[in-house]
Structure formats: structure tokens, C-alpha cells
Amino acid sequence: MATNGHTNGNGHTNGHNSNGHANGNGHTALAEPPHYALLKEKIVILKQERQAVILAHNYQEGAIQDVADFVGDSLGLARKAQATDAKVILFCGVHFMAETAAMLCPEKTVLIPDLAAGCSLADMIIPEQIKTWRAKHPDGVVVCYVNTSAAVKAECDYCVTSTNGVKVIEHIPADKEILFVPDYYLGSYLKAKTKRKIHLWKGYCPAHAAILPEQVDRLREQHAEAKFLMHPECGCTTKQMHLADEVLSTEGMVQYINRSPAKEFIIATENGLLHRLRTQHPEKQFYPASEHASCHHMQRNTLEKAFMSLVRMEHVVTVDPAIAERALIPIQRMLDIA
Ligand code: SF4
Image 1: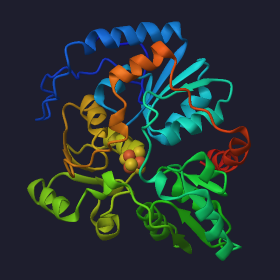
Image 2 (image 1 turned 90 degrees about the vertical axis):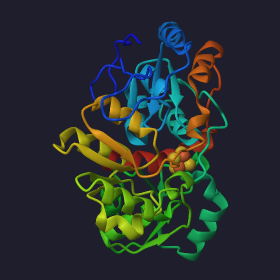
Image 3 (image 1 turned 180 degrees about the vertical axis):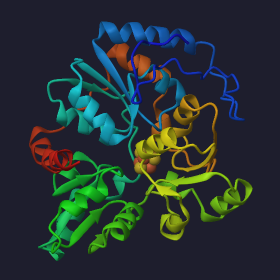
């Protein structure tokens, strides 16, 4: 496919190979449907007509990453949403991410290709549960992972991503106990790294929970030279954290691999990230820690739906202004710290 002239998160142009050719690292990308090439060209034209920018999460299907102006993690996408002067943001990710963009950019139109692209992890906590928990720990500081609804964020004191969690927690006065929602494994990781008193909500991401320690052990035996990179949402984090060469956010993995002389990597996160890694580093080999680490919410967005989203200017994501006003407080605190 022709490049679209924009750069993605690493300064590379988006003329990725996702057309079914072997990519040089032992894997052959799945052939794209024949109509995708035309669809991509139409999206580029439509994007200009709508004065739109396409932001895509690292877990989106490869074809969407190819047409995106920027591919990144939640934090990177939030910052790009703030920085763009485009009138329309087509947010190819899940609903809470589009909500964050809508709150940070109230003057822009934020679209999501599929309104049902939610997040199982975010659904594991609701505002009333935070109020009840806080009542039991009246001096506690409530810290939420960015993977929460705007209504939940409105009940929290600080927001974090997997990139900046340690920095934000360390910023909170040391005598404060912390209530962390909703991801138990990321919370466990932050607790181990910061040695802070952190109470953990027992939420989890099913896609990351699909990565099992036994599979990782097997892969490490098969590929003894490979660096093992693990996302802190992984269910096996608590057991295997000490075995990982690095525990990193998706963006952290990209940066680490960009710098690393290593040629092989075992990647423990949602498998959508592999498209970006293989595209940027065809000379390296990447092994998914589990073939089953796939997020059905992320996969709801397709190239066709992204196209229709721009054609129909749907589905517009908005947040009740009263909720947005409160939810922006923990988000802005996070952005100010890291
Ligand atoms: Fe939510 Fe997990 Fe999907 Fe991320 S991969 S959007 S945390 S369900």
C-alpha cells in the first residue's frame, strides 16, 4: 500500500507491509482481503476531507495501524489527541480511550468505529464500588488505571497508565495508603516496585490472563537467547515478574526493542502489538507468549468500520460535562506528573 505521508509514533512512515508477504522474521502476515488496498486509499482521501486524524492503539488490527497517523499506547494517544489541530479524531481503540480523548479535547469531534468496543477490565469496577471502598479507607488515595470509564475516573484522585504508574505512585505522599483499581496485576507490580501500602481491586484483563506461566516457560526453553518482555497486566506477572528481562508497557516494549541489540523477543501482551514490532523490525524475531492473547473488544474495530465511521461521522463519543469536569482532575494530575 502507498504510504499516507504521515508519521506514526516512532517517526516511521506508515507504508507498512501487511499484504501477506513474508516479513523476514519467520512469520508470514495474513493476507489482507483484496479490497483493503482500495479501502485504505479511500480512507486517506476521506481523512483529508473531514480534517481528521486517525489515532490507533497498539492492539488494533494491522490494517488499521497502517492507515493511522499515530500508533501508540493509551498515554501516547491521549497526548496526541491533545496536540492535534485536526477537527475530527477517529479513535481506533476502545471506548474508555475515546472518552479520554473527548474529555481532553471538548472542541473536537471524537469518533470510534464500533461503539461496542469496550474493555472487560474497565467493566470490573463501577463508581458506587469506589464510593463504598473509599468509605472504608477515608484517608486513602484512590488511584485508577486509565482502563476505567469516565464515571469511575470521576471518583478517583489520580489516574495512571502502565507507562507512568510508578512515577505517579511515588508522587503521592508516602504516609498515604493507596486504593488501586481495577487491575490486580498492574497494582501488584506497582506495589512491588514502589513498596507502598496499596490495597488492590481484583479486576483483570482476560486477554492478558490468557498468558500462562507454563507457556512462557516452554518458550523460554525453546528460545534461550530471546529477551522476555512482559506487560504488567499479565496474569502471570506475580509469579514470573522476576524472570522477565523487563516488565514494560506496550510503548516501553517498542522503545526497548528499538534500542536492543537482541535479535529475538518473547512478547507477553495482547498480540496486536506484534504487527507494529514486526513491521518496524523485520530483521528480528518475535514470539507471542500466547496465541490466545487477543482482545475481542479491540478486534471489534475493523478497517471497514473505520471507513464507515468517517463516511457517516459516527459513532460520536461524548462525556457528560459534569462527569468530565471531575474525571479530568485525576487525568490532568497524571499528565502533569509524567
Ligand atoms: Fe481491556 Fe484487556 Fe482489551 Fe486492553 S486488552 S482493552 S485491558 S480487555
